[in-house]
Image (cartoon, rainbow, N blue to C red):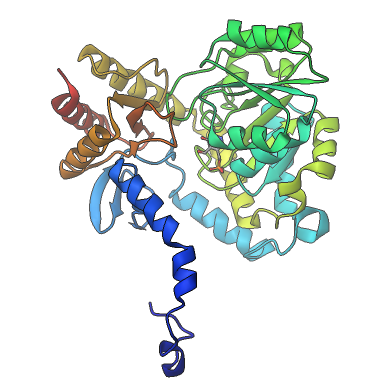
Length: 405
Ligand SMILES: Cc1ncc(COP(=O)(O)O)c(C=O)c1O
């Protein structure tokens, strides 16, 4: 589409040379990104998320979405979205504190608190916004944040925004985390971790971290973005599965992955949530999450309680898939769930193998820095309830063919 403001007069404008020169450094940076094999083109998807998707016009078996339960394109949720928009509008129209907080947001908050067994919850426009606002509210100068080395970018950015003393402990190493908490003086202490790590598919040592938080009088913040809807008897996440709900001060999650919607949330004691309502900048100063997305999340939480067979089948499929790759000595690290990485030596290798898999009809993204630490690259396989056993088998055969020894 050409610029709609373009008129014969404007096309004759002289080239603004100083402006172009001021931007030249951007092209140099982009050239470096390309030569390091880190360039990431945006693919255009046609149609809904599903087992097979069309990307840039190419139909591929989809192993590159976080739609773990297959709800993102589910007609029941599409209908809930339309109904929500009809009832409360296409947009929220204002920040939650002004007039953007609708009945649907209120119901969603209450339903989340009931699922998570917490007192209160706050809905954010995204999980990213939930993390950055919450972490930067709970710690500041003079405080200590102890954060896992593989935490998600939104946690890292929340830590940076806080201006607290941020110390990183090696991935899942409780001894190192304990040493930091016991030796560094601070006014207040906050431990932050993903529950299921988004790139490694590993699970945080939640019981040990809860004990550590208790022993060191620290607040524990757990981000369940990739676990909400998938673990525990009621499907609330890994905190429920570990039986440590009463020890986690701050529970964060997203509505955008297994729940098939959009938005993020923070849940916990009433005092925590009331404090965040007065301090969390991305909640106070951003237009509320769209009501239709709240309607979708309400409906998918209902489906999650009615359809536990989805998470059970996903867990079984994931277990078989990991086992098969491990049996063929494919390096999947310590993956324990439905996110399965295949670790590769270089970004170039990751890009090449992802391209070979595309030729075989699979969409598997090549993950490179800055999504993962500088020295690592991987293929990230996201399994979903909607994959058939045959599809998963053919993907593992192709991976073994390209990566196996
Ligand atoms: C661990 C973790 N937290 C937070 C987020 C951000 O969630 P959202 O996509 O809802 O912004 C992600 C996104 O991938 C994530 O992996």
